[in-house]
Length: 238
Image (cartoon, rainbow, N blue to C red; front, side, top):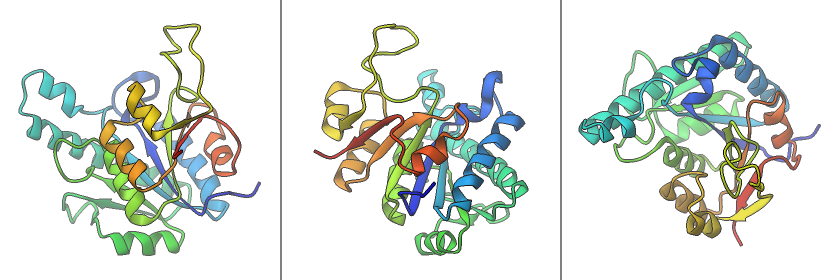
């Protein structure tokens, strides 16, 4: 199998790491994802990762319960760093050299985010995990993924979810929901489809950065997407 992308950014939700337990990090799940990432690295693809923090702490949920939004978001950013360090450990157990770069400085745990250094790591075949979102409250990790992907010159954002693409309605609730093969950024924004938040989608649109939404729960899907198989939903320009 020949990869069609040279450099990708893989966006994982924090919830993906929790597996069936719903909270925290499931070792079997994180090791499984690490093994799949290794398959892609072995194909010669440069891989960057952004991981959410929803399995530990959701800033938005806490702020809606009365907590100060900025404080809640900073806590969410710290949760993403915990996930990043856990993923680094899982990847290195697979023999993949990995660096965590944090948008909030914490020298003992992670490198500071420096764009040129991140690109250098990728060129050397290391996986780079971007932690702490953008480093700013009021921005989601989806926006962080779009921003970092644009900065490092990734060719595509692979958004791993629990469903096999974007549907007209929630397929778990509506049996008549139909999966889209392709969508434009504007269609996603106009229809309010829950792909990424509007800031992230707009950033991808401005930088002509395609997004592929695919099912992470099926083994081998990361490799399939990277090798150009038509799975999931592709979001791109006109």
